[in-house]
Amino acid sequence: MYNQMLNLKQRALLLQRLGRLDDAHALLNAVHLKLQNVELNEALDEYDLALLQEGLAIAYLRLGRLEQALALRANIQTDHSVASEWLQVLVEQDHLEHAVEHLSYMDLLDAEQALDKLLTKLQETEDEVAIALNHRLLDRLTSDDFWPRPAAA
Image (cartoon, one colour):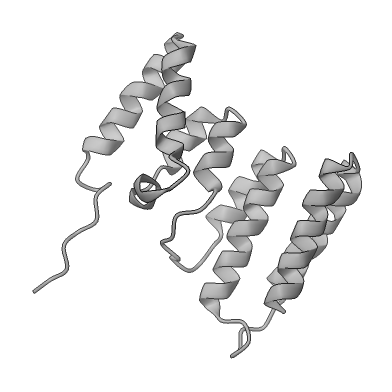
């Protein structure tokens, strides 16, 4: 089941690259429907489902479906706490406000350096919105809530 969903998502992204956006979107919608109705078992647990949902949200984002991507990602029930492409794709597509909102501690460990790319875009833009986003980003990074809490002894 897991591999089947991954393959369908990849096929949708390939359809997008081939210029068949409607077909790609329809395929992602079909995957989303299947994931909504999936029964968790040994072959597909909550963590796997969360990873598939995250991947689907990223695929929607790559297709320019920001609202669907945000809604799907907001409904992920399991905290899978892994670095993902989410922030990177938000930055690539200039959804900088959402990138600032969705930045997490795990993104600091990202090999793709999405935070650096976000900072570069904010510095290059230099308009009032970018300046305000830069301040919000600084507030997030200096907030105690942003950083992981030490484990209780």
